[in-house]
Length: 437
Image 1 (cartoon, rainbow, N blue to C red):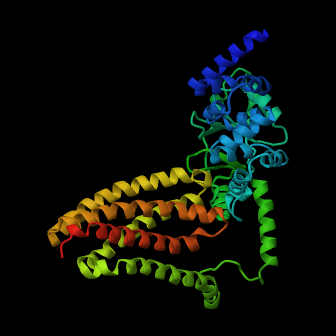
Image 2 (image 1 turned 90 degrees about the vertical axis):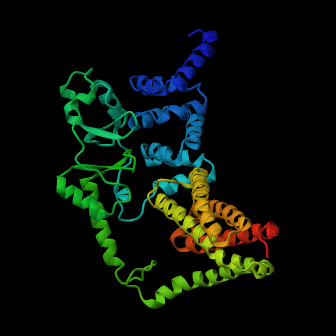
Image 3 (image 1 turned 180 degrees about the vertical axis):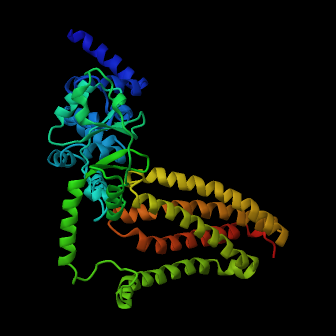
């Protein structure tokens, strides 16, 4: 190609990929990985990240391996964590470590955590190196891509739809007996069963027994394929687990169980209860700051628990949703601002709705517009703060290595109490002239 024409071609490719990412992904998948990587080599990271989700996972992994080191690092640092994990899962472990080593410490730590799963979960048994392609790929091109991924030993190609969700299976053994230009979608067979990465070992075993499968796909909550559990791998892993269980039968558990001894429970819980006592004094000290205001306007003491109760419930709702997202790997630390923004917005609108109802009740009870204004405004503020705290606290605790299930509720109670008391009594003090005597 003429050197003078290269910038023009790069600009046209960038515009095409940016404006028509789905079509660009489909076109790239018909090319060889080397040619596809060369075509994308001059594009900005932001453009590559924008269309990456439209690539089939199997092709994405091969394409990634053929890109320059700078592009690979930029893509991993810019992709959402869930997509970066799926991409890293598609390459061999010895290739994965150098990629992680080039990332910033925070991002590498987060991706390593997401790539690990609890013992006895489906995620622990799965092989993340899967061949997942779109159905428009020809049988011949699929065989060429399989040759690129030699050593995986795949029985089936996993077909994914336009959104990357698992859509069917193609038996690899059928491919050589069909024309090379035949779209593999015509060879599709339905998926009989799937498991989630956090499903326990017993569920995986049950699925294998129920459907008599050679392998079973592992998908996330949105149906994106994460890996594959093969029957022989599961059997070998089960032998190791049984052996480890026998060796550790006399050891003390590190985690409390329903039938653990009471002294074990005391050792686990008492430190947090002591912390809770200190935080309760902190909340009480906030009330103490406004002792003269409460003494002058006794109606405030009646309404104070209403504000604290609503902010506490709002925070608990946000906390429950966020902790579930962390447990199921729906969210990661890098998405803290999305989760927080959602909960703040929910707290704002819920606060407005509750404030309207509360204002009506308080006006009928007291007839004071000043009191109505105080409780309405403080209700909105405290519920927004509670939503923010409910989202941030478990994410921060998980990020620093603490168990959110143990510590979150104690910290959240303090934050919601302080936010509720301070906003209500602070606004009441500012608007004391409207409260009357």
